[in-house]
Each structure stands twice: as C-alpha cells, then as structure tokens.
Image (tube, rainbow, N blue to C red; front, side, top):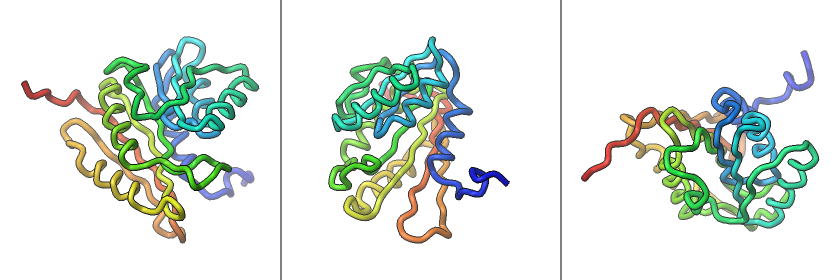
Length: 197
C-alpha cells in the first residue's frame, strides 16, 4: 500500500475529489478563500487555458502566497484582495460552475485572523446567485480554538435552511476523530429558485 493510501482521509481530500468531478476545461470558477493557493492551483489546472479562475482573500499574505504558487507552476488566476462577500462585483449571476471555500484561518498564518459568520453567510448568498444550475459549492469548515464555534453554528443553520427543492446539501464529518475535526460540505444547485414577483 502506498504512503498516500495509508494516510488518513481528510476534508481537503474530499474537497479536491469533488472539484475534480465537477470542474471542466473552460469553466468559470471561484476560490472564495485563497489561503496558500492550493485550491486555486487545482482550479487552474482543471479549467485549463480556456477557463476563468477568480480568487479572493482579505489577507495580502494569502494573495501573495497564491500568486507565487501559481507562477511557479506556469498558471494564472484573477486574484483580488477583497472579501468573499463582494464576489458579485467580479462575476455575473448564473455564470459560475463551482465555488470553493475554506472557512477558518490561513494555513501556517495567524489563528487570530479568521473568517466570520456575517461575511461568510453573505458570501454564501452571493455564491448561490452566481452559480449556474448544476453548479456546486465545495466547502471545508474549520472551527474551534481561537475562532470558536459561532461561525460553524451559523453555517450549519444556513445549510439546513436551504430549500431542498433547489439545493442538495451533503455534509461529511469524522465522528471518531477527537478535538474539533473539520468537516466538508457539498452543495449542488439542482434548479433555479423561484423568484416572487
């Protein structure tokens, strides 16, 4: 058995599998929380030279780290030091195939800076408007420690409140792991929600 096969399955493994299944060459996709750029890199590879990858992070360190990683692999994306809540300024409604989020803190960065429920929920609302029918959100939720549980609880409430006529929500947890194990969520937009006039 390979070393990779022996390693425990984690939320990023699930997220990257879901992305690989759902993103195709030429797609428009968004990395709502660039972090160190690993998801952005994968999205660039999956969408190819004909795709469009848009990335966001509020921290300059994250944008710089992502740009450096992409450059080192001959890849490019539209990177914005801006809140993910503002993503509708950069893409049109119904034009995006997939959006990935990592809620929590910057890997190998300060745990004193982390995503907040208010802007995260606003970003999710924007994401659902940007997604085309058949599109998906791929989410990893990190919690506990300095950032506590308030964002996690707000996200869980938000997921549970999505209308099942239009969205499918799959949540994958690791109940036999100790501490505060992160969990992964896949949300698919199965049809366009009705608009009340």
